[in-house]
Length: 122
Image 1 (cartoon, rainbow, N blue to C red):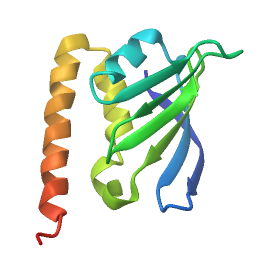
Image 2 (cartoon, one colour; image 1 turned 90 degrees about the vertical axis):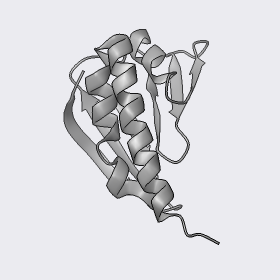
Image 3 (cartoon, rainbow, N blue to C red; image 1 turned 90 degrees about the horizontal axis):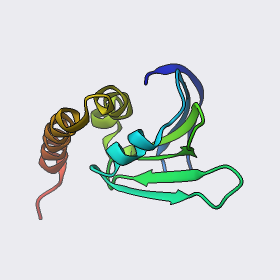
Image 4 (cartoon, rainbow, N blue to C red; image 1 turned 180 degrees about the vertical axis):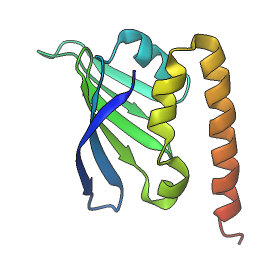
């Protein structure tokens, strides 16, 4: 999966950045399973269209409909410069299964380390 187009970008009230993307293929159950390795996935299959949300604390949240090519990604304002490519990386490494999960965990740990360096000591 890859991003074909960025449809909309806006700054939210809390300062986070929301981007809506169009993907080259629909969001799959396999991608949602991949996301579970990095945060909380909530699925709402009882809705007319099966909706899901993903939350990775201090990183990003993703919302959309399973089987759709449109997705909304919200980036945390405190670390936007560190996480701006994170969704792209999730899409890229999701095709690699367990190896992709290990690679993404390494990337995630590296980003967290840089986030922690920024935290004021006190």
